[in-house]
Length: 108
Image 1 (tube, helix red, strand yellow):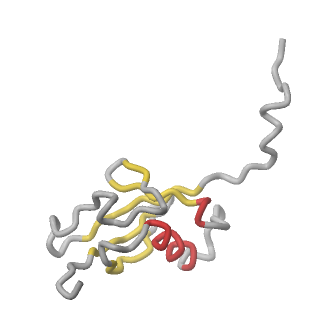
Image 2 (tube, rainbow, N blue to C red; image 1 turned 135 degrees about the vertical axis):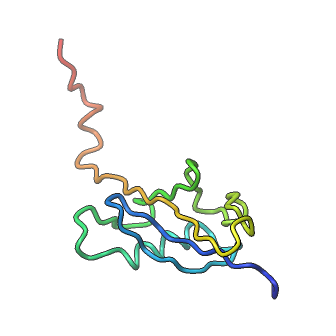
């Protein structure tokens, strides 16, 4: 769309640092945003994600789904003229052994 208004987004990491701000179309998918975050992840961070599945993107307290667009995710398109929307990035901690919790580590 020619007159489509771009959203200015920045991504806040767990330690308070930001990636961005950059402008995106409302038709941009959450999965694509995660790919951008992964590509621009600061090299000096300890808890770096390995894939987009290791990332959760949160806006207004809601975890956004990879296959949805910004508009479908109810990101406030056009409601903040000239404003930057901050989305929070959560990295899923690495799991050492998924089966260790299921194999009977119960004490009697």
